[in-house]
Image (cartoon, rainbow, N blue to C red; front, side, top):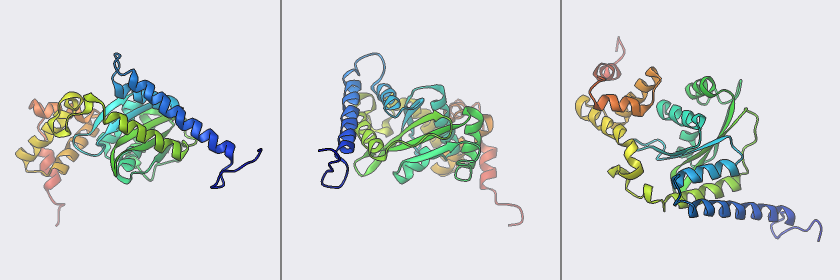
Amino acid sequence: MDGAENRIGMPAAEEERRLTTRAEVISRLAAAVADAGARAPLAQRLGETCRSILDGDGAAITLAYTLPQRLTVCSTDDVSSTLEDLQDILGEGPGVDAYRTARTVVARLGDHGSGPVWPLFTEAARREVGMATVVAIPVPMGSDVLGVLTTYRSGSDHPEPEAALAAHLAAAVGAALLRDPDLADPPGEFTGAWAGRAEVHQATGFLVAQLGLSPDDALALLRACAYADEVTVADVARRVIERTLDLSALARDRRQPPAGL
């Protein structure tokens, strides 16, 4: 019957369209999982599939987003990598908020959008990648958040994806990643794919032991140095481990109270 509605008042045609879309999501993700034996890692295939489904120019998947063992398991292009690196260095941005609040967050990097919310990230992102719409979707793991799926499109006026579809996609991605053998090791052991983050963890521990900092302050110090030198946190961590960078003076400055107190 034309114009028929389902029992909750949604037009039948609209309900069918959404169900078809969700079925397509599952089908395409299942194909990515089934094809995981090919050269590209599973996480990379999932990221490319998410980019396509969400009509993005690029996508990234980052686990443990605000923790020392933070790990980007997929980045489909240089812009996505830059956006993830900036948020890692600055400790702010849509991905950070999505991870902490378990809600989808949209950043519009235009002439006026998002600036007051993340002033450092917005300024740096505009300088590095130009105008863009960034959508950060939390990837669930039961009642917790496993990580963040982020997509971007050039231009700041794109609509955000339909909420139910984004949530369904993120949940499916989370379920697939939990079965990925490359990510199966506990983060504290830093084996498999986690090994790429081991240097940050090691450098953080070094600063805690040698300079008497808290883990949060040690990681903040690594981020501050990375921001000042315009490099990644991993680059700074590697120099600390190799003893080619001494952060003791910066650490003293962080602990020293302002003059007159």
